[in-house]
Image 1: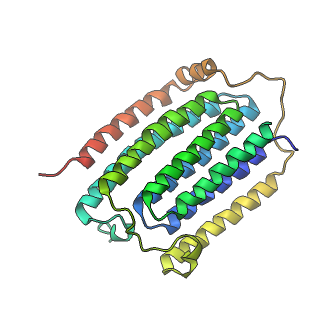
Image 2: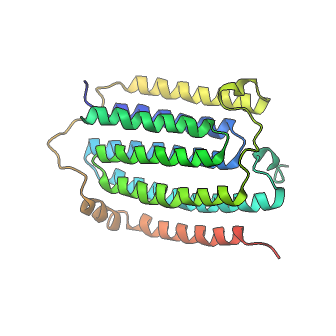
Length: 102
Length: 171
């Protein structure tokens, strides 16, 4: 078997990122859309760790930790928005989320 | 051994992610996403990044997904979404169809870019030191990236205040 190269990790990361994009674009449930965004952030993290190992530079892992911190902040704010939205509209469908349009 | 472990973890991550996107019940989605993150933590261990793996488990699977679980249980709307899953979405309303087309376009671009890179592009340096040491990460975090570290603390403070303000009930 061929050894695992960063190319394998790039392909895996691209696949996970694509799944996240498909989730954001096709789903209408706002909680699942948020989970797809988390999926995309993780796909990026895999890339950072793979190149950190390949180039023998710890900065990639430092950035992966920053990404995790930003994801945590984003999840807290996003779930707060979901709660406020549900309190006002009694639904989780983002098609109903249009009061800022026009 | 590493090769087998990579394929097992990668397969778990991809399958769980597909199911996350295709699931009707958000509760099942959260559980599958935790599975996916666990598999990704295994990949970090394979990538010689044990600290990132533990961070992934503690912060993602531990903190963020528990927050998601709380919100899903708090709202208690198990299956209200009538929209079709990704496979039959091509037959759905125009917005979803455009979404599918844009996603496939991005997928084609990524495949094209990866095929352009090729396998021999990455520099190989097996003699260099391993990056798995936490001391190395800490030194980099607190010297060269100290400003970004402090800025992150401000970001988390802002997120904390914002979450409290957003979740508070108006009187």
